[in-house]
Amino acid sequence: MKNITTTFKLTGLALVIAASLTACNKETVTAPVTQNNAEKVAAPLTAKDAQVFLDDVAKEMVALGLEGARAQWIYANFITEDTASLAAESSQKSTEAGVRFAMQAAKFDNVEVNATQRRQLNFLKQSLVLPAPQDSKKSAELAQIGAKLGSIYGKGSYTTKTGEKLSLGDMTSTMATSRDYDELLELWTGWREISPEMKHLYTRQAELANEGANGLGYKDLGAMWRSNYDMPADDFANELDRLWGQVKPLYEDLHCYVRTELGETYGTDKVAQDKPIPAHLLGNMWAQSWGNIYDLVAPEDADPGYDVTKQLAKHNYDEIGMVKGAEKFFTSLGFAPLPETFYTRSLFTKPADRDVICHASAWDLDAKDDLRIKMCIQKTGEEFNVIHHELGHNFYQRAYKDQPVYFQNSANDGFHEAIGDTIALSVTPKYLKEIGLIDTIPDESKDIGLLMKQALDKIAFIPFGLMVDQWRWKVYSGEISPENYNTAWWELREKYQGVTAPVARDADAFDPGAKYHVPGGVPYSRYFLAHIQQFEFHRALCEISGNTDPIHRCSIYNSKEAGKALNTMLEMGSSQPWQQAYKVVTGSEQMDATAILDYFAPLHVWLKDKNQGKQCGF
Ligand SMILES: [Zn+2]
Image 1 (spheres, helix red, strand yellow):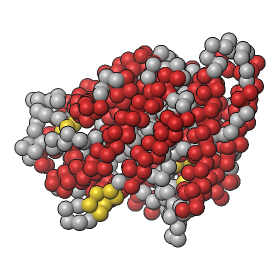
Image 2: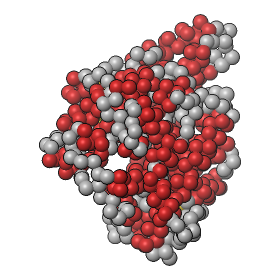
Image 3: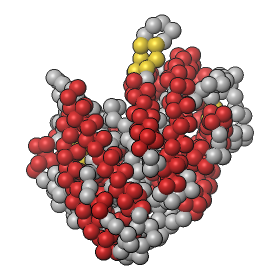
Image 4: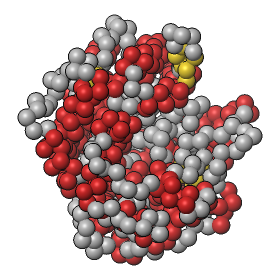
């Protein structure tokens, strides 16, 4: 997804495509919308005018959605100068259409329309992630800034002291595996050399997009982003704080334990035991998920006694076999099998003779039945899990295909990722045994290792998932001024994550810019939500399935009851406030992070024991 930047979130069908492309690597891509003929609407506007406008836009979205999805698909499967140009043109076209749709939709703000019409108009208004001011010069400037920021990030590289030029991909691999403090530090600081030149662009972008948000009736861009969740913008912010408050005690114990282990690895002179953890030691360029340092913190005796990668080989699974296996998970829940075209049109293996984008993603090209995944599948246990996750997107897309185009999307922007992950949480030893991949389920004493791995990836992520937009909201509201961009970023990193910059930052540093979603203009709260929601969905579906095991051992495989509840929620798309969809599975309209605490309960007990007598906190 490196060549395409996103300047607005897509609506309706187009958004379906964006959601699918966003899938799983937390990066985002643009997709299409259109030319529209709604300019003729004249005052005073009525509900009837709104309907004519919405119908026109819907038709255009369908047409451009398909055209754009094809352009993006071809580009991602066959990277050349030409396909890149075609994909960029379609993105541009959709951006322009999205701007017009939003402006036009805002004209109905004071017109009395029915609830469905209002919901559809709001989607159009909020489809612009970075709305342009109503001034063609400023609007062009905003587009140029977006392209420039995307390009600086996309072309970013670092040349080491020994003269080796490294891409972000190269550095990501080394950050995951190196245990050399100085090497990690060099890469960490090296990557952040790309971003100082972004700062003035980012500052101007915030000004312009704020002006655009004002024009659409929002007090600032952050308020506009927060208004996407079927509740007042301020309530949404409070809601995230409340959820974080529920998870925090578990996070603090994980943090405390990991800090101790890192102190043993690198020395307590480098990892002070009463301070935040240096951000370059956690196996990830942004310290956002820590699964790569599992080997440093793995509990003794935690080997589950099997290796899914080896088991896949032993049972002669090839790439298609792995996909068919994952599909069977869904059919066991009562979902219809994937269409034949899924198998003929998807990309499953890395082609030998051309460049493709290998990041796993799930696609829905026509909002009917043309579902696909694009993955360069490796025959490993981890990838088997990823396939389940990707198919979660595909089954979601198909479930809401009969909704009007405006509502062909997940209930809120956290749901799509949450569903993929919910399914992946059911890939447990019990499930692997049921499908004949392993012979015995390891006893519960081995669960701590599996839970630790999950916690390093998922619990560690939660405060990061929260702080990125905490920072942006304050930037957009003016609470954080450009002089303080970087210090405020690190204050939030320390406050929420308990991680710190390993070296003093230069006065011109702009470390937020070294994270894709900041220059890319992609809101981040969705990832926080997805991490909370998936555990609640998992717990609720397990309950519906009649599970009696601890929920970290539960798989909903074969449960028609769980499948039915899941399908009912998925079919709703975004036609209702997300709380209504949430209620279908969880029985509640309110998110609740206690499912996380339940899931990780055995690990939490174990961590508390290990942390006894230590000075935790940061
Ligand atoms: Zn995904």
